[in-house]
Each structure stands twice: as structure tokens, then as C-alpha cells.
Length: 389
Length: 249
Image (cartoon, rainbow over all chains, first blue to last red; front, side, top):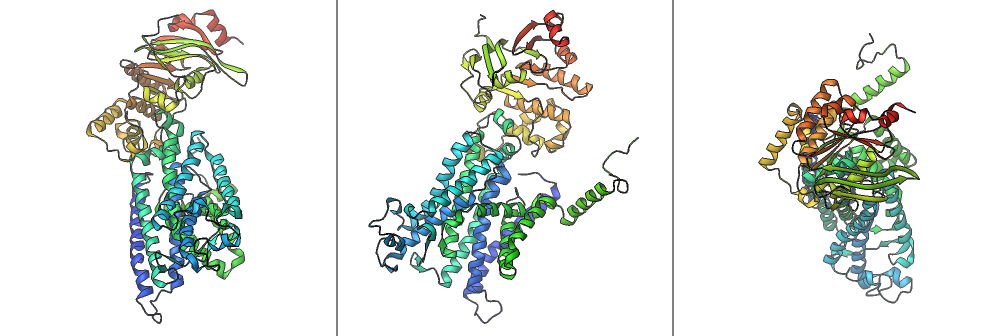
């Protein structure tokens, strides 16, 4: 727990309870307004909006997972998109198997892309994915295991700071290239798509969309409480200690690598869950989800919302993605500049993000004063300094 | 060679070099159980490197390092050595700036250090009392709930010493504890360290001669990675080689 000024802490807790309450309310309200209010009514929420909001919520969970490792343990992961994508692929594989003989080629076992590649039998790593429970297990296990193996080597070798960020980036890029290959058996460039149903429920039905939205909202709330429990425990204080003075923690007898490994794996599993909820809502998963730029974008959501606050990144992800939807529609050519600009402005004016700053106006004022002082030192004496004798 | 079973720390012909530079050169040093020892020496004499070797940060090329007479430290890492009972204070005061003074001490509590244990940790009453005792010892009761980052330089030094006390180590390594302290703080620190040395073995590395004098203990002079002289401060100060090293060049 970052001990900020008391008032701010209260405000943040209030903010958290407000946001979580809102999430809980919308988890029930949005599906209800979609399913039970007639389309003519002004209160009706169209199905595409339900799915869009559901997608934002999976991003919010993803941002939360990054905040746990970056905000609290100082591990700036620029590869979290990989864990998200792996969770998504695991869910996608299940839905591919569910298609059965309804595919274009009508093969009862092989997904279409395998028939197209003239494969005769299912690769061993596709076994079991026809079982929903097994697929869910893989959603948790595959990202968790990759994070464990990656973290085991990286943290034991004491790779930290920018070097760690670079190798996380390399990890997701390597996976991007690997998944592009048709030989990998994950649909290559096109990825997995054309999904029909989960547990017999049509993915395109309103009921299914509403359920996925509900589950996504609940997953964010669940993720928040998991992270909150971790950061409020003594383990949370240890990872903050590691973030602030790693060698001090080591010389106190803490095995820094185990602590980092723990939060990294938890975070990867949360990212995997987010990915598994994302794929059925957008209807496709392909290697572009591994793109390094995606992972960097997550970091922007977290920075903008306020890292090390848990609730901030949730807000950041929702706000930035809403803005993205709006601006890529209204002014598509400027969106990337806006995103870059937002990140620069955040770093300059809101180093603690939206939720961590006393007031945005105050910080602009501070910056203006600093600038004025720098330009005309005599007119703006620095009140913080002792007067010269 | 000295009988090493009654030593808390035993270094024998330890050498380490970095890129051909011999930072520690055939260093031998014995510290007895319960002893307070000061180590002085000019810059680059290898004092901090010696601490790095003892605490597992640096692995020596050759030589033996034994703790409590029989535990070889050269094969262990920092965390293992810390849990054996060796505490270390850094030259630059290093505390967890975003935690309160209380939390800093709480994190240093002797005990299990596994992540799982930490996740479900609950502070017991006697542990709370222990923290309050140490707060009193290092004179920071009033700063209990203050963020450590807001403490003065001297207070941070004390907090770090307090964190070592919470670990309750058999051996404390204290690197330049009075650097940047006021005279009053220096006197207070000397009193604190002497007090601690009643129940712990302590090694102090320091430049400040007045401070070393006030510790009133055995002194080693380190020079170019090995021991140049050993004895009381008066004795080593009158040693012509020591005078040459400090005043010559």
C-alpha cells in the first residue's frame, strides 16, 4: 500500500468503492436493459454496445494485471499482451473444436484451417480442448506457466529495469512471429475465428453477449479484490519494498526473485482470464494480439489511470478505449497522435495518473510557475527557497 | 593460524579481483564472538568489497569465509546469509521510503521470509511490542507513522540500524554509520552502537577518527585489499606504515 496523504487515501478508497459499485450495478443493469427493454425504448442498450463495453472491461482487467507488477513491484512488463493473447488462444481453441462438422469443410474433428493445410490428424497440443473444463484450466495454466518459466530465468539472473522491459518485449515479439507460422498449428496469420457457440449457446445471441458482459464485469471486480488482497498483505509491503530498494530487501533476507515470480505469475493468469473473455466477444484471435505495440498501449492505460492504485488502471483502460472507439470513428487519422500526446501529457503533468494527483489544475499551475520562473527568474522568486542573506 | 571455532567471522587469505584489479588481496581477519571491531582505511582500500564478500554480494576468487566457526559463506546468496544472522547497513542510508517507519521495522522482523507466509502474515502482540522497543532504542517513537522518505539523513541512518536490530542478527556489519551526521548525532550513534555490541558482534567501517576513538575498540587498518595493521586505535595511529598510507602519496 502506498501511503499517500490521508485525505487522498480516503478519496481513493471512495473512488474505488464508487467505481466497483458502478461496475456491479452495470453488470446487472446493462444486460437487463439490453434483454428486457424493447428496442424502441430510449433506455434500450443495443447488443453491439453490450459487446463493446464487455471488450473494454476485459481491457480493464488486463490493465489491472499490469498495475500489480508495474505499480507495486516495479516490473515494467512490455509484454503482457502475450499472456492476454495466450488466454485468448486457449479459449479460441475450445471454440474451434466446438464448431465440429459445421465448418466450411465439414470435417468433424479438424478445424477448417487444418483441412486447408491438408493436415490429416489433430496435433497433440489440441487434444483435450474439446472439453470446456480443460480449456478453462489451460486459460489459467498456459499464461501462468509461461510467466513462471520466463520469470524464473529473468528474476534469478537479476535482470531488472529497462533490460527486463526489453526482454518482455522480445518475448511477445517472438510469440508473434511463431504464431504467424502456419506450421505452429494455430491458424497462422488468420488466427482462429468463425466461432459458433460455447456450451451450446450461440455466441451471436443476445443472451450470450449479455452473459459475457456480466462475466467480464464480475472478472474485473474479482481481479480487483485479488490484487487488493495481495497488495494490502505483508507480501504487498514486501513487493513495494523491492520496488523501492531491492538490495535492502535482499539483505534483510527476502528472496526477491520468489516474490517477483509470485506477482508476475498471478498477473499473467489475470491477463489470461481477460484474454479468454475477450475472444468470444470479438469473435477472433490472431497473432496481431502479440504485437509489441499492444503491450505498450496497456502501459499507457495504466500510467494514465495512475499506477500503483489498482482502481486507476481500470479507469484508465475504460477511458482510453472509449476515446479510441470515438476518435477512430470521428477522426481516424489523428488517434495515434492523440494517444502519444496523452502519454506525454500524463508523464509531464500527471506523473501519478488521474487518480493519484491532488488536482489537475494544481499540477498545471505548478508547471506554469516553474516555466515562468525559468523564463523570468526575478519576477517569480521561488518561495520554497530560503531568502539569500 | 588462529583457532577458528570461537570466531563469529573468520576470513582466511581471501582474494577477489575485478578486471585485473585486486580489490581484496590475501585478506585474513578474525572477529571473535561478541566483539566490536572497527575497520578503517583510505578510499579504495577494499572495505566495502570486504562487506560484499561477507554478505554474499560478491564471490571471492580464493579464500575461506566462515561464520560461527563452521558455516562457509562463499556458497550462499544474500538472502541465505541474512537469514543465518548477518545484518548489513549500507554506506548510503537505505530504507523503504514509501513505507512508514513502523512498516520498515515490521518488514525487518526476524522470521519466515517466504511469499506464502507473507501473504497471510498477521502481526502478533509480542512482535508489536518488539517494534516499539526498537523504536525507543533508535529514538524514533514520534516518527512511528511517518513515511521513511520524510526522515532526516541521520534519522534514516538510525532507522536502518533499527531494521538490523529487528533482524536480531549475531553479526552486524555497519558501513559508515556517521557519514553526514551532525556532532550530536554522531555521539548518539556511538552510544547506540556500543549499546548494541553488548549482545551482538559488530563490525563498523568508518572514516571519522573521533568516532572510532569513541567506540574504544580494536581497529584494523585496511590498505590495498589487505590488513596493514591491527590493534588499539592509538597503536595503529602510531604505526609508521599507517601514517605513510594516510599522509603519504
